[in-house]
Image 1 (cartoon, rainbow, N blue to C red):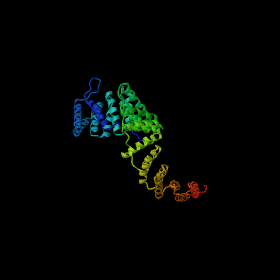
Image 2 (spheres, rainbow, N blue to C red):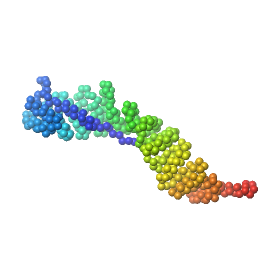
Image 3 (spheres, rainbow, N blue to C red):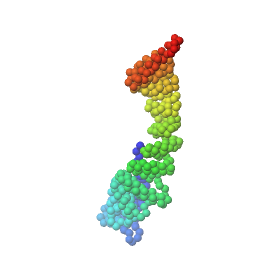
Image 4 (spheres, rainbow, N blue to C red):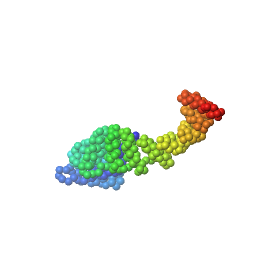
Length: 425
């Protein structure tokens, strides 16, 4: 079974999206409107505005000069202090010093008397930044606090919370958070994102809930019919011992040209044999070997031979076995060829294959000698047959059968002698 991971919500695109949110937070340096809002002195506002402009222009040294100038003022109000550290946070984020950015935004949000909107936006920003620095405990707690007061949150905060719970191995709460995201998205007519399904899939996987893993993957192949989802679906059906649906998934993947890994092609071809389609299974494996998608090892070639044998394609089975025998250090493949040749009444080839098997070495020499003796008998080479059968009697497993063959041949030789002499047999 493959190991699956949740999608990373903080790819480069995720960090880029966060920069937009940080810009929104930093934009609150503008003087608030309304008498009830905190006020900011003109000088402070001017310095913070210049610092923000310098940061956005990439002139970090100049931005820091403006902020340090503000910091010298010992009479900053809580609101001004919050704006100062918000600007510092944006500067450090822009410099990619995310730990410092978290520290400054944390100081900013703890100031008293801030506008609720600023607190809310900064809390959400802090939570996302904590994901960037892999502080998942702090990130989830921050999101929980933010969601407790958010009036109409969208689905994304719940997805982010689910990701945090996943990182903390709290899979059940993660699924609950993700369910909220699905509900909000579907209720507002928004599209449920592919990455959300991937997170849901991996959560069920971590819980060992294969039925729901399958359910999510069935949705994924319907909405996003990608190669990896079809193969994962086949694998998940395998975990449920659902061979018919596993085979159907592999069929769909194969027809779309998605199967190119040795592991999957071998599994697919063997499932076809088990399902009563050995010929098709052998064709799939033969084509994969020809395309070098499956390595032409002795083991894989012998597997192909077995498939052709079940499909009653003995000549093709022998061809595959001959290739396997050429790679083998022992004579097991040659011993099997000897048996197949004898079955086809190709007695000369059977003897040759048996001789090769004995020369290279096999586990059951007695059985090989029985096959060779029977081939000699069919050629009416009775003395050679008896000699081989007598050798076979040295093997405990073959002793009885070999002795019976020797006795039978001697009776047959006596019958022939009497016939030649004109006597009654």
